[in-house]
Amino acid sequence: MTVDPSAILQGRPPGRAPAGVIVAIAFSSLCLILVLAFDAMTGGASFVVGMMLALLPLGIWLPVILALDRMEPEPKSALVLAFLWGAGVAALIAMVLNTLNFIVITDQLVSADDGWYWTAVVGAPIVEEILKGFVLFGMLWWHRHELNGVTDGIIYASMVGLGFAATENISYFIDAAQVDQLGIVFLLRAVVAPLLHPLCTAMTGIGVAVAALSRPGALRFAAPLIGLTGAIALHSLWNAASSRGLPGLGTAYLIGLVVMVVLFVVVRRERRRLVGLILHYLPKYIPTGVVAMVDVQMLSSLKARKAAREWASARGGRASAEAMREYQQAATELALLHERAEHAAAEPVELENQRQALLWVMQRARGTFLPGGGTARLPWASSTA
Image (tube, rainbow, N blue to C red; front, side, top):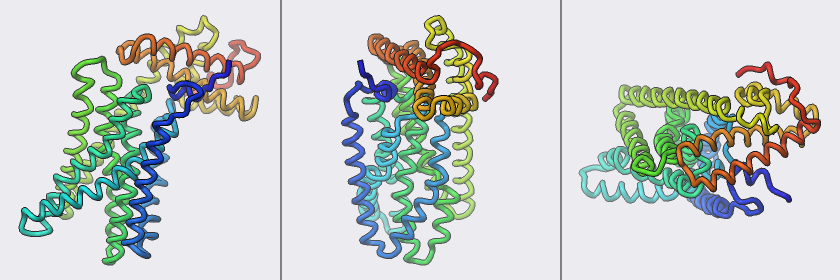
C-alpha cells in the first residue's frame, strides 16, 4: 500500500490534492495582481520604490513569526493562503469599501479631514478586520484540525496581517513619495508600527483557535466573535490614538508593545503546554515500539529536535533527515490528537483513523532513519531545550 505521509500530516485524504486551498490561493493571487496593477498605474515611478520599501519589513518579521511554530510547523500551503488572502482579497475589497465609506461619511460631515478621521477610527477597523478574519473563519470551518492551539491561531492571523500590511504600505509609500514625505511615512509604518495588522488580527486568530479546541456549545460559537470584536476594538483604538500627534502616537505604540508582550507570553505558555502533552501521552506508546523514552526526550526540546535531524542527515542523507522531520511532526500531532479527543473536538471515528495514520507515519519514518531498530541511547538524548 502506498500512502502519502505529507497528506496524513496535513490531515487530508491521501492521493487527493487540496483543491479548495489551490483555488483560494489562485483567487487571492489574482486579487493581489489587480491591486498591484492599480498601484502601478496610479503611482508611476513611485510604485517600484513603494513596493521595495513595503517588502523590507517582511524580510524581518516573516522569519520571526514562522519561528514561533517550530515544534509543530503548519502546512506551507495554508501559510501561503493566509498571506495571499491578506495581501490580495482583503486588501482589494478593503480598498474599495474604505473609499466608499469615506465618500459616504464625508457627505455627512463638514470637512474631508473629519471624513478621514471617522473612516480610520470606525469604518476601516470594521471592514479590514472582518475581511482579514474571513480566511480564519474558513479554516475553522474546513480545516479545524490545523488549529491545534492558540499559537496556530496567532501565526495564521499574523500571516494574514503581514500580507495586508505589505499591500497597504505600497499605496501609502506611493502617496508619500509624491508629496516628498516618504521618509517619515516609512518610519511610522515600517519601523514604529510594522505589526499593527498582525497584532490586531491575532485577536481573531486566538478566538478561532479557542473555538477549534472547544467542545460543542456556546464557547465554540462565541469565541471567534469575541476575538473579532477585540481585533476591531484594538485597531480602532490604535488609529484614534495615533491621530493625536506625538503623545497619541506614543500611546498607540505603548498599546501595541503591551499586546505584543502578552502574545509572546501566550506563545511561550503554549509551547510549555505542548511539551507537557508530549511527555504525558507519548510514553504510553513505548510498548508498541514506535517510540522510545529517548525519543520522548528528543521531542520535548527544540535543540534536541535539531540535533536529531542533523544526526539523521549525517547517518542517511536527505531521505533520513526527511524521515526524522516526518517522525517529529507525526509524534507531535499524535500528542495534540489526544488532547482533541479529550475535548471532544472531533468525531471519535475520525480521531481514531487519524491516530492510526499518524502511528503508521511514525513507524515508517523510524524504519528509515533507524533501520536497525533498537532503543540505544542516541546523540540527542542529552540535549536540552
